[in-house]
Image 1 (tube, rainbow, N blue to C red):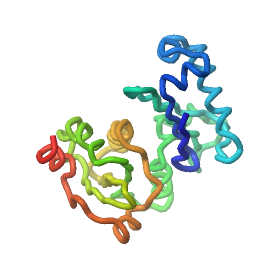
Image 2: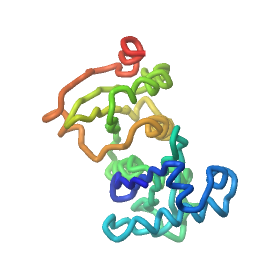
Image 3: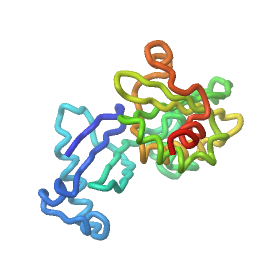
Image 4: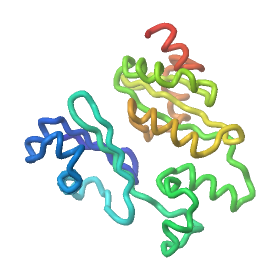
Length: 215
């Protein structure tokens, strides 16, 4: 099993089907047996250990992606917005999914300061360029809903999505980012670091260019 700490609230597991069998479970247990799948989940969480500093407190959001040779499990720890009381959760929040999205905090802060958040960058890491090809084929029709740039940095590729929240709803942006997370990993790097130290591979329309020249 591979464990990757994405950020302070998110950790990602990768288990091959061999890993799952070694733990005494089957592929059918994962997808069709709720009790067994929950048992496997907590077995995974027990292996986090103290080194990750990932405390399991409050609600968790669990996303499971099926891969060719195994499964990818992304666990995100919910965080209450600053203006919400714990006693209100989850009924005091119109969309509970917003608890897991850092954008929600930014939007709340801007409301308190009477400022409007317009642009937000989201970075995704890809170990190989070829990982972008099936993603481009899936999302090429959505390329006009956001700006994209592609960077190379330290033998990895980084896709930047720039959402304009005067033109797109937060939930729509979150759905798009979720689709991309099926192919790439959210990155802890900042766009400013990539702009300074990375190499620009494509300045815009990444999905259209990848689909045109490499599909």
